[in-house]
Length: 114
Length: 112
Image (cartoon, rainbow over all chains, first blue to last red; front, side, top):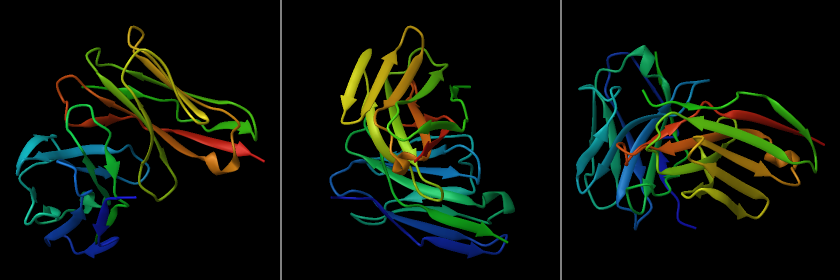
C-alpha cells in the first residue's frame, strides 16, 4: 500500500541552525502539506502546496520557513535559524486532490532544538 | 479563529462495548470531516471521512454528521484494547479548503 515517507525520523540541532525535513508523498498525489505537533498539543497546519507553489499557509509559517519540491518525488520543509520553540513533530501529508480530500500522513520527523 | 472542540477524556470503555466520540466545530461553512487515530508518538492514521449529513459505516466504525448542529461523531462498535489511542477530529473549512483544523483529540482506553 502506498505511503508517505519522511526523513530523518529524528533531527537534533542547535538553536540558530538551519534544518531541512524531507518527505516523499504518495506518487499519484498532487497536494502536499506540512503540519506540526508540539508535544501534548494539537496538530497544527503549516502550509499546503500544489502545482509547485504554496496554496495556503498559516500564521505560524513565517519567513523562517520555506517549502520546495526539488524534484518529482521529494517535498521539503526548510527551517532557517531554528528556535527552541520549533521543537515538535513535523508531519508531511499528501492528498490525491485538494479540496476536501482525505490526507494521508507520513510517520513524522521529531525535531529537537537545543 | 476556527475551532474544533473535543472532550479530551480519557474515555474508558470495557472490551466489546461501543465507544462514542464527539466533536463540534465553529465554521458553519465547513464541508468535509475526518476522523484520525493517533497512537502515542505516532502520526495520525485516517479512519474515515464524511461529507454529507447522516451516518457512514465502515466495518466497526460509524461516523455521524449533523451540519445544522455543527456536530460530528464517531462510534466504535465491539471496542478492542488495540483501539486504545487518541482520536482526532479534523475539519476542512469552506475558505481553507486545502487545510485541516484538528481538535485536541479524545483519549480512548478500552479495558480488557
